[in-house]
Image (cartoon, rainbow, N blue to C red):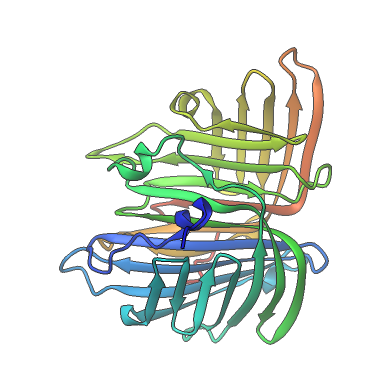
Length: 337
């Protein structure tokens, strides 16, 4: 059976044997009627030799924009033999949970906190895979250590989520699905995505500002952006843009600017500390880093033409994804898992 390119992009890369490898599928959605959002992960880690045994995990975070005190995270670890996958079509299964091209479902109770999160969604999107890197060289070669793409860049979620027993029915909620894999996470990064703009429901923004290790040294910050505005896609992710784009971030706030021959964009993403949930990531060598994650951040952008005339604005109130990841713990945010 011939697979679409989107489906091939989602096929599991791990061969079942390699050490020093991780792979992650994650999905996020924003449900405006309930003012809630979610982020879930299906993951595997095969540690380096003598670090530990391979394992797989299910993760989830629930966000309540109206009452951040309701935010919480769950995680459940399983032995690697609870992971199953197919190569002739996209399907990944962890214990009783599954992810495929048009559906994801799971039921996770965290054994440490007692919180539970269950989801069952149908996923649809007409967009092509968004490739963060502009050439296949970056996906087949050794650089960078983490490969990332988004097969469902501008998706709609339909189904339900059950939050500690409370069921929320979701209808055409804007969302996204990402696939990443590699030998090591980046040194630090900020990443964001939004497809909930009040001015234009078809607009999409994606941003990544990352620093990676190159042997014993750290790279400059590499800044990649994408914008779909007024029906046109603008890519700011070629190597020249990595250094030309402007970006500055700290915990809870990210300012950026990027331009091509058609548009110049200035924007800011921000969220309060209580709108962030911190979780712990682990590299295959056992080293830790911390993801400070919000799916209820706010974003505003101004779009100008080359002559400097304002031609549009885009904004979303508590409808943007933003994560700030570093090798240190920020004391302003409680680490949940």
